[in-house]
Amino acid sequence: MINRTVLKQIEISVKTKPVTLITGARQVGKTTLATLFIEKGFSYVSLDSPREREMAREDPELFLSLHPWPLIIDEIQKAPGLFDAMESVVNKEKINNPHNYGMYIITGSQAYRLMQGVTESMAGRISIIHMLPLSRSEILGQEEPPFNFDLASIQNRATASPLPPLSLYEEIVRGHFPELYDNENINQDTFYEDYIESYIERDVSEIINVRDKLAFRRYMEVLASLTGQELIYNNIAKAIEMDVKTIQAWTSVLLAGDIIHLLEPYNDTSVIKRVVKRPKVYFSDTGLACHLLKVNSAATLASSFFSGGFVETYVVNEIRSSYLNNRKNVGLYYYRDNNGNEIDLLVLKDGSLHRIEIKSGIAYDSKAIKAFKQVEGTSYNLGTSLLICSTDKVYPIVKGQVYAIPIAGI
Image (cartoon, rainbow, N blue to C red; front, side):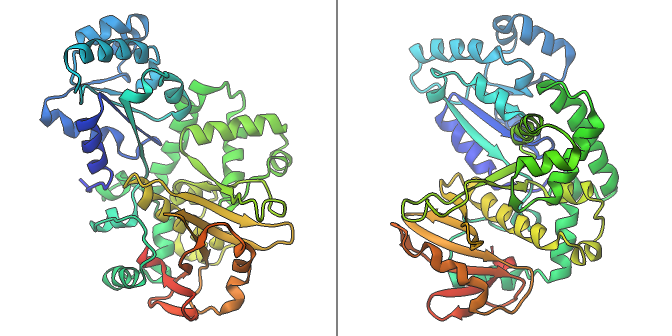
């Protein structure tokens, strides 16, 4: 089994909160990590079982009495009424034991329904762990610290595990679901096709009534082609001949299932009048997006129109993972104004704003980062500025101010 960085955060949560919720996309490894706690005295029940699911829905109090804590409940979104019953059990236990930690570990893959179940009184008793597909560090078996902008550390990581362009594209096409790395016999195309079919048939259908499943598949394909770009509902609606409200509803479903995530535009009083207000959309797994677009090889991706967007998606996902897997709260944004100036990624961390440009090539000069000056009037301190690309060595673009770094150093 691949060691997951987020496991440490789950262990901390179990020791400090009565309820730990592990949420994330289908097949990212939630159940695998949760069941590790069986060795620590937890029982396990899955609501994928029709009998258990029916009982949990019809009589949640009886369900919890028949399955006493410490308990792991898998796929809890299938019986949202359990949250109220669980809250009652937690509150009763707290009367006798103020430190009633580690009572329940629950998992689910539909964030919207899960968050509906986390009641106001439950909020202080539950810790929410957001689990993502594998990071490169996890695949390589390396330590995964939060991305820290330290040039020496970045170079050391890149030197230890280089990532030449062809290998980068191979990893992007492969994707980052654990099963693709745990099972050497698995067929990648079959895995993703089964994933999409199962996702639409089960997860999507549980949230909304999708009458035309082929249209929803087409919608996912169009959205995959836009990974790393602004989310413009009207354009998508025109492309698949659907109304805008339907596209907005479908996008909410993909967000709830963690199939995609959004990067909001940078909001600063010094620049807000000039910036666009639409978010950018990213697929949480590049392999899934590649499959939707029938990009099935590194060579195909490298020569395609989509290569730049996929490299940007890969880098943003890696940086995002390094923070979420360590439960570090940072602000991630992008900048674009009405004149077309764009900064791919802005990281607001410890009171400093770091500017990042993402490229797929190797050699760049100051022309590539000309938009950086657009946020120099920010009220935050300007931190280290980077151009992340396929170089194998850190090099200065503007000495003492902006440096190009290897993608492998993230």
